[in-house]
Image 1 (spheres, rainbow, N blue to C red):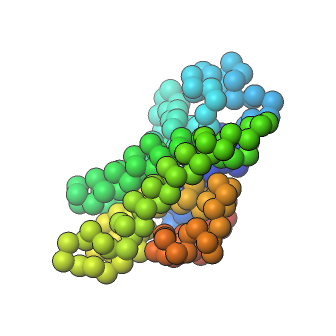
Image 2: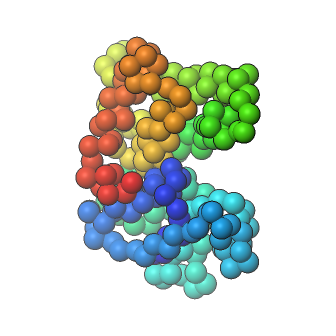
Image 3: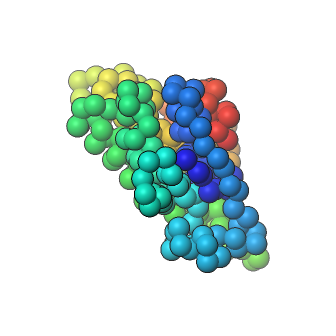
Length: 224
């Protein structure tokens, strides 16, 4: 396995799963850091691997397939690694309905991530402040956080109102690629101008507990 990446949230989620798989199965990989500052990802050799040249990471699987398997899009990479290198489903699910939950939450965040990117841009990335745009995308992010909070609180868990520990799986859930695909982004709420005390804790206590729960894992600490 070869990982072409940079230390971004999308890169971290794949690094986390690789570290988790290493701890369980002993898999190994090599990492090539892509210099986004010099637009290395737009060079011809990279575009042959990923025509969407502004995006990392890319995973190359050279273990068995010929030609080399090249996987792009961080959520797709998580699914590929789990399906092909997690034979005991430690980070996945055997039942179809639980697996569909994991994919659902991967897709949920994959579609939400651009909103976070826009929020960060209008808060920190513009030469002149654009208050309306910044507030618009901050509000959109709070709505996304509220979806995660409602799910983790157990509010809509039918007869069971007990909080969940993880995003996918029956009961309190099971730590899976759904959490890995979401956590690196959500943990960065401070970069969007939110504070733990005034913005997050009053409205999203279960989400904060989930952030801390994932952060405590040794493989997660190595992956970031």
